[in-house]
Image (cartoon, rainbow, N blue to C red):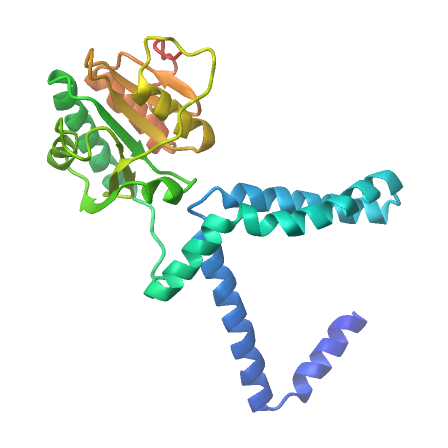
Length: 277
């Protein structure tokens, strides 16, 4: 209570100029912090920051409880963390400076799709992969969710086109620059195509799975993305999510699975998926 009373007395002692100056100062700092959060939301830096927060909280608790050994270990880590941070966050720092130079730091953040728009997106995806599968055209389509994929978007060619079955079919036409890479979807737009994805290193994968399937599993292991794969050899449609691969999907099953993954608030009948491996 004494602290609040002192704060209140300080506020009352301010004149209008001081009050506006402090308000402007706080607003600028809050805005910069907000834009920084929006910037790293699209990268793996979010998980790294969560880890740092856990270490800080553990350090405070260890100091308050006089846990000498734990406190000593954490104190030794501080110097390592200070040195390692610029290296770990090098891609994010570079991106921030590039966006600041291009004037993109003050761009509006991306918004998520509503249920109706997501249903339309799912319909276009299903229609596209059905045609690709029928023609045995290999395809790799990544749908970004909470974990951003900016690191991988930068490896491809910018498209920034509204998602449609026709656009996706044309992206994966054989012998084109986009064919062997992945198309990444953010919201209702194909952000980039021809993107390179990390391959899964799991030793338990079937040898029948090619590079596309390994790439789909690889990105699904390190993010919450939903990935559609069309096999070039067999035309089989698969979906990777959470490091798991659902194969041999027909049109109805594919649509239901995508709805269950992209529209979690809707109660779809997805209790049994015998194709999961």
